[in-house]
Image 1: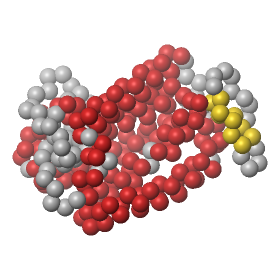
Image 2 (image 1 turned 120 degrees about the vertical axis):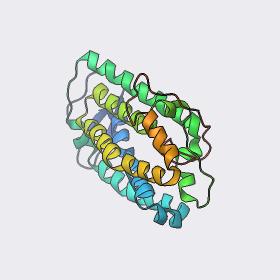
Image 3 (image 1 turned 45 degrees about the horizontal axis):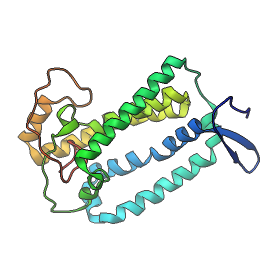
Image 4 (image 1 turned 90 degrees about the vertical axis):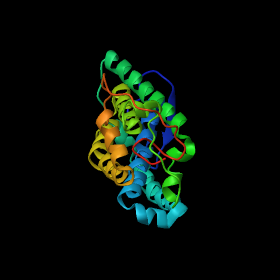
Length: 231
């Protein structure tokens, strides 16, 4: 593999070859490696919630073992994953950086509302926890700010680096969230909160903020990951 032009570089030696990876490439590879944690965790949590609660905190090592195997495969194919890229114009790269920062800001805002304990799913593992609907902060604008932050961030990484693998991650993450995770979450919340959540759905858009959305009374989050989770 030819040496990239300019920038800081990381030199990594494989078993049969030596290649040079730039810092942006290494960061993009890290994003690709960490992404599987999202569906590995949230699909079982909402798809087989009773089993997850029964397993409790044993879910963490189970998910870690599965993720570690996937991460090992990604690492072993790292040179291949960063090889295919699109040479975007500078304006597209700058737009990508802005998207990534916007996604990071939205995720941190969501984290501030929910706390680290909640956003890592701890309440989802406990039976009998007091629950309430979260409508504060970013949840007053969209019902699923966490997944919106993922879409912005992953899309931004793709546009700013041009690495095709990150583009696939952005697309797959969006499709999995929209078609699998979010519907399961909302069905679960409708069962638990009934008309309260149904009215919330009528006022607040699912994924894309819109002007003129009806404002709602804010509820401080204490035990939830996002408004489409439980607090």
